[in-house]
Amino acid sequence: MRVRPTREGKRFFLILVLIIMAAFNTGNNLIYLIVSMMLSSMVLSLALSITNLRALALKLEPPASVFAQTETWINYEIANRKRRIPSYSVRMKSTALPEPHTVPFVPADGSSRGTLKTVFPHRGIANMGKTVIETSFPFIFFDVISRAETPVSFTVYPKLMDIGAARSQSAAEGAVPILLPGDELREIRQYRAGDSLRHINWKATARHSRLMVRETASETGERISIVLDGTGPGAPEAFEKAVSAAASTARQLLEDGYFVSLATTSGKIENGIGPGHLRRIFEHLSFVKEDTSWNSGAPEAGGILVLKSANSQLSARAASFRAVIHADRI
Image (cartoon, rainbow, N blue to C red; front, side):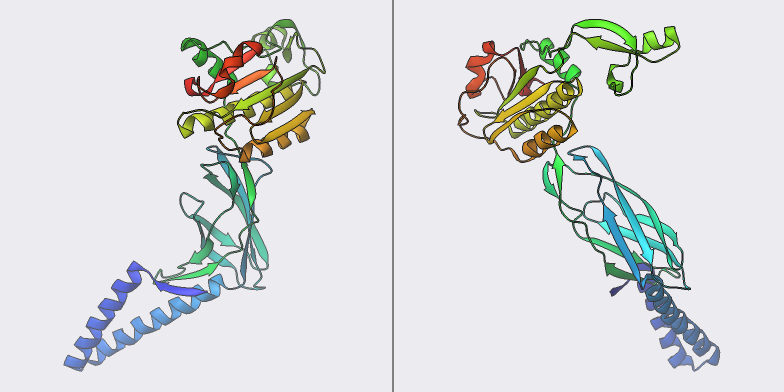
């Protein structure tokens, strides 16, 4: 725990010094009385601030899934171990937070819970950085600061994007149209438990007064591969878009019931299905890096090819894939 005078405290102390000089020069008892009151208020402010922050413990817990460049809500709990004395106006600061967060009240022998909003700009390993709790209650003359416990490191997944928007943008710029499997409409039927909310047809829902979903012509259990080629020249931003496109495509296909595999220059993830498999794909894409050449063997054709640029090594084989995403044109 450390103590730092605030701007108001420094001004108050300067005024106190001037009044002390006036008291010595005049010998006026009333001025001596004012000096003693000001000194006592500063001592009282420091004592109360230390007591206010004493025996507080902060616990931070990130959500199960954190995505880059996306608003993330971190759960926090401030526990007050003082049995009879509550704490007031406690601030949390962290290098991962855009601004301090204030907790107005923490009950005695209790806790206060809430959430913190933040954004992690990059995929990969992250944490909350240097986190402190502090208070200047009650007279804001001093900031009393205590280093808080920070959570263990966690993985930030790639940013997710709307593949439909990527499809429109690519078509507008002359790229190969992105036609994901299951685009052909089979029927519109009543919603069943387990159906993706993304497939709800709102016009049909309004017409029938019950939830209706669109069913596409995808075949249950069909296998499809996603190949991410980050080779060749191009800006780093294009590679990050390619990673995001691969992650977003994998999520859409797995939600539609496909068995999905992923191949990158860093390795391959075999076919799988379900939330656990999607998490494995996200984990892999969180750490994939650009490479100068494709060194993972011949990729499985017929799937979806994600290219960093038109000059990527596998661009010559684009015709053998059912869909191609050009990240530099998104």
